[in-house]
Amino acid sequence: DQGLTEADAVQRGLERPEIADLLAARREAAAGREEAAGRWANPEIEYSREKADVTGGSVEDRYLWVRQRFNIAGVHGLERDAATSQRLAEDARADLERREIAAKIRRLYYQAVAAEREAAAVEGWYGRLAELVTEVGIRAQAGDASRFDALRLERELSLVRGDTLDAQAGADTARDRLFSLIQASPDALTSELLPPEARSVDVSGVLANHPLLLALDAETRAAALSSKAEDRRSWPEVTLGVGRRELDEPGETGDGPLVAVGVEIPVFDNGSGEAKAESARARRLQAERALVESRLAADTRAVIRELAARREAALAISHDIGDSLASIAERAYDAGEISVLELIDAHRTELASRREAIRRAHAARESYISLQMMRGDP
Image 1 (tube, rainbow, N blue to C red):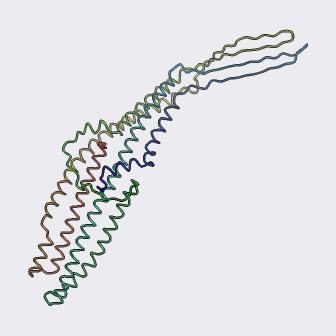
Image 2: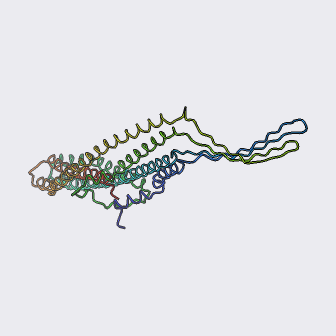
Image 3: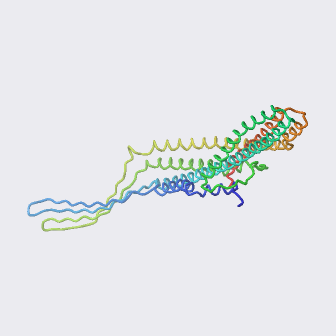
């Protein structure tokens, strides 16, 4: 009964199962990669049986081995730490995607609000012009007004009818896009189009909590850890094996334990190329982070200035249209002070002013939505 507010629209949109799955899938994929990183090699079990015929019988050898490969350089631990940092980066990027979806819902919401108000303004203009056509037509039949004036107003009314239909179609389309995205039943939109004033914005606070910077920080740590892990691959890995041997010979049998130690010689695969690549990626991400921070700081200050200017412009034109220019022109026309063309021009000017006020308020709202996305407003 109270209609749909902006906050309700954002909440319903983010709670839509498809959007929730979209955000959750990114996090779950990163968590899965973290779980898979840094695993130990699987142990190997080997059984062999050798048999040979000799004079007086046969000789049979049976071997059972259990082997395990060990990395003594801590590569697996570094890989797990790198995967953890990468998961944190994906979590931050999921938060950024969530902000972008919320901003999209807000933009669609206020596009619908602006389109509805513009359609209402055009519809009001059409209704008033229809009344004028009727009044002037009656006066023309009585000889109190020119037939030209009546015909000119009728032509203007037919032109305005097209604008009315276009504006209503635009409003219906904007509402349909909004309610299709948030999967809600159509309802009245109750939030104000003109945004509130942004009194004070801490740019450093915006940057400290921005998910894009957090993601780049985490990705830089992941690349540095990966580079360290690849560099340690030059350390040899050790394979330990334990087992048992059973021997059957003519007239004699025996068994006993087996122990083996194998050391890898990292001649061809020592991770040096991968280490250089990951180190370069870490430096690139660090440089990119510095550039992104500068850009976000400048964008935040620009949005704050833009919001203040657009909001002031919207308020200024709203104050200017406080007196109805069309009403003044209608009284002047009735008194014979202006022509019908000047009357029509006054109506057009007032409608243009009202539509411009709506557009300026919408532009201010767009700037405010950008600020909300940067701040991460819930």
